[in-house]
Image 1 (cartoon, rainbow, N blue to C red):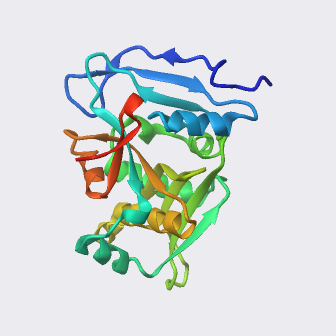
Image 2: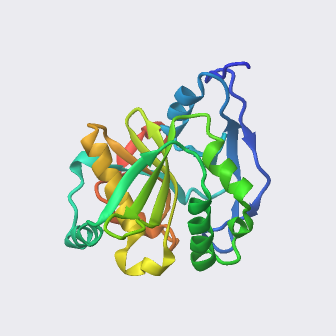
Image 3: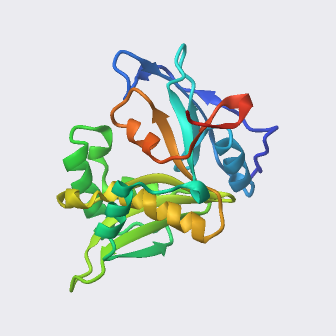
Length: 242
């Protein structure tokens, strides 16, 4: 297999499609494949420049006349949780955290389907079979893990949340997460981010990568709550969100 290098990497552009975040907008993506022994180093280099991984592809928006999607990361060691975040952490103090190899299980898939049916009914991912889920989790050319969260004190220790996460040289990149829709009072989505911040700080690393932030999209605006937050600004590098 030929090793990719920055000099030999070919970039491709998708056709325009309706934007999932901003009504009336069209999206296009610039992407390439991650292959070979140097996939991890190329992944990190492109992530530093605002790209995002999905299975063995890495992409970033390249929309004509729009730059609303901006790659963001939390500065973990400077993060100071608000009262709301401290309450969420305390509420979930009874969860166990297990970092596992990226191997799909039927238990995860059942939770994944329940989450999609509750939170994203009618979306494209809602039709994913177990094999599709397996590819999403296991088709990774870089160092990835599954972080499982369970009710520690329950007799069956049921699975309540999962995060598919890439391990970066300087932190963790949250690729996709899902959780029990019947436990809305726990704010599990928030807790997963807080736990990743804690893991990054414990490891002496710097950042939690959250993917794309879209200021005017209700689905994405929440990411601005995790301060200090940095935004990737192309040639300017990572800059503080103000």
